Length: 425
View 1 (cartoon, rainbow, N blue to C red):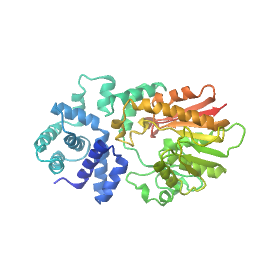
View 2: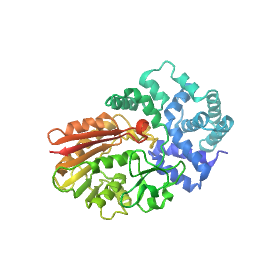
View 3: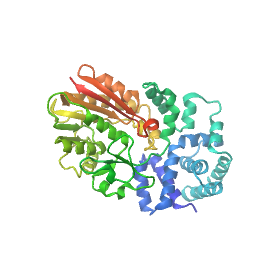
View 4: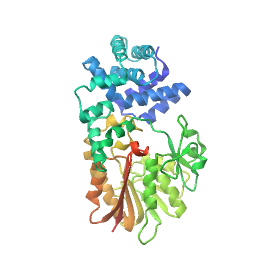
């Protein structure tokens, strides 16, 4: 019989493939429903996240060994077996036997012998040995894509991003950092909570951050439950810091706008700083269900206003805000270490759909900020098409580019975040 943690991991893989499920939402629910905790929950979490993160590499090995099309559920099972054999401290015999048992229980008896044979052959080499086999005769970005389990188009896009900062040689380090599970980082919302009140070590870059020890449950922290603190990557905190630290030219500093606020992390930090300064934050989110998430995030900051409009239109008058944040919808290529399924779900054509929206939102933000006010345009993607090219297309003639800041997983241990500060003329 296969055990419950492996069955939970298999269920998540199938839901991600068939239903476009999100691992960070589905897996915790399955663990609760199946009453998995402690070592079982940790095993299921590592097996799920690790298998999805490394599935590109495992698929290259599986394809080398099989040489034919495989039914998707059988491939999912082989991926789980590969992760146990090549990346976890699971004895080979246990990894093989439990994978075969999983197939019999969840798929049927017919493919069990095939899965047994392929898993036994996978056990003949370690991961480095298999990488040498499957990359023989392959070079450049194609080899990096296999070795670091990224789609080739994302490897090329990240190379373009690093070239902008003359760091293309760092591409292998960036890809490796995408595959390192991130620690949980908390934000202490100023005026409501102090970082010293939170568990973990102080953040490296943000004055509001606390980095939890591995295995901690942020939901069990009273400050997080009460909305005084939240889970938030340091890179996201630094985007907010860039906006609130920017000096304004003339006029008041009383009305702030978060144009794309869902699900509410940055809005929560902005609202806390605004409350300290006597400013009023309007947090806008186009989708009502995400606007409700913003309201939950701001439950300890009732003076902030949550609304739901299309940010490209909305009811606001021109030049009616002093500071505006555009945390634009993007491909999320900078957060691949946190969202293991995203690298396999995104496609190059997503840029064609997103970039016009990003440009329209930034144009609207520049119109809404007063002369001398500041707009922060941010993405959790380093893609040039979603970052500097959007700013270059919108800024000239109406706004002055004050500065650009970037943070990287391999350099800063943050998501790959981009922020440009523009001042309206």
